[in-house]
Amino acid sequence: MRIEAVTVCVNYAGELAATAPFNAPIFDRWVIITDPDDERTRRVCRRHHLQCITSSDHARNGDDFNKGRMVERGLQHLSKDCWRLHLDADIALPTRTRAFLDWAHLDEAYIYGCDRIMCNSAADWNRLLGTGFLNGTLDCGNHSVVFPPGFTVGTRWARPDCGYVPIGFFQLWHSLADEDHGYRIKPYPTHHGNACRTDTQHALQWDRRKRVLIPELIAVHLATSRANGINWNGRRSPPFGEIDAQQQKGVSVHGPQPISASMGAAPPS
Image 1: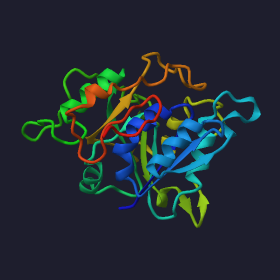
Image 2: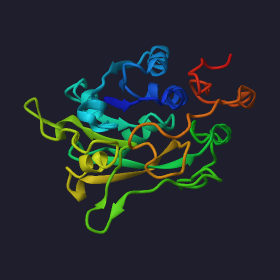
Image 3: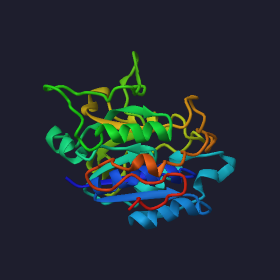
Image 4: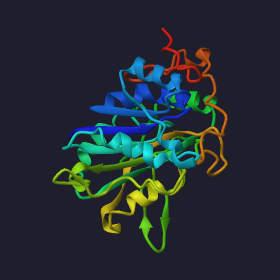
């Protein structure tokens, strides 16, 4: 399967610097959309060889932060025949994500979501790295999905009148459900004016029986504030804190090493 991802990253360079070493090897292509003035994000993209598109569409017509416009701009650059993933910059995926998705035998007519655990500080992030959760070395017991101890599970969006809805931190669907003869039949909603609701509006373009949770895939959310909606109108929460290089010593991940998040520094040698 071919997976191409789109991520809006405006003033989230610290989070992207922390998540990119884990996520980049998973995707066949990863498109980052940022503001022209966000040099820190562009620096992270250059370091990890990510395609970076700059746009001011999020501020058109007086909008504070129209994330949907930015997502749609990125989606317009993806290949015709592939799985498309909308992923937030502050989400890290396990190194075995490709295997989980291959084994799931996904249906091209469906949209998929997953659960996430919450890391509320750089210290939590370092503690999580030490558990081996992301690289698959955490003891999962016998035939069970185990969440790492000491971390809360993020909200799963579901309502009695419409059921489960994959929300914007991870939304996976196939281009065959998105285009018909080159015409986008499920464009990303762009009319809400900020980062709220457009993700649920997007997923609600699929009927409930075609909105599916992948239970074996658990993402990690780097959250610097527990206030709901604090960044819906642009970045308001404090930036992801500097990861203490001393705490990184002895931490092993399969592939890239964890990095200093606040300035997008290179992995420690």
